[in-house]
Length: 148
Image 1 (tube, rainbow, N blue to C red):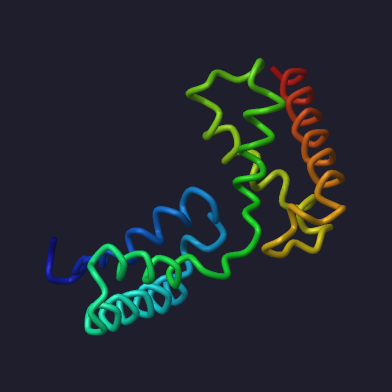
Image 2 (image 1 turned 180 degrees about the vertical axis):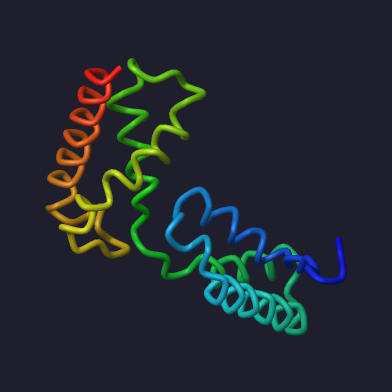
């Protein structure tokens, strides 16, 4: 590490949150303000729980509830589920995650047509989104095969 570009150490809670965001919420993974604020709140919650005589395990559980609360519907989790369920015959297991990540930007216009909230999986429009995403991926795959 050089003096002109010091590397900031991430806290435990920042690392935990960033791990989830990278996997399930790539649109939030670069939001440093959100990550810092949420992890600071989780650390404060953990500290207060310890002061209140909770065990470390209990305090961690309480802090994790704060750290991961109120996250939106995960577009990436749905895409990964679709890729694994609908295209597992066409894509090797070790390539499923990478393919879903590639499809993320391609499918954003489809996602943008729906009002996604944290409970969207229970919404009657979930099946329509699932079907439309599956079709978009299939069309992309068909067009990509024609180009090759």
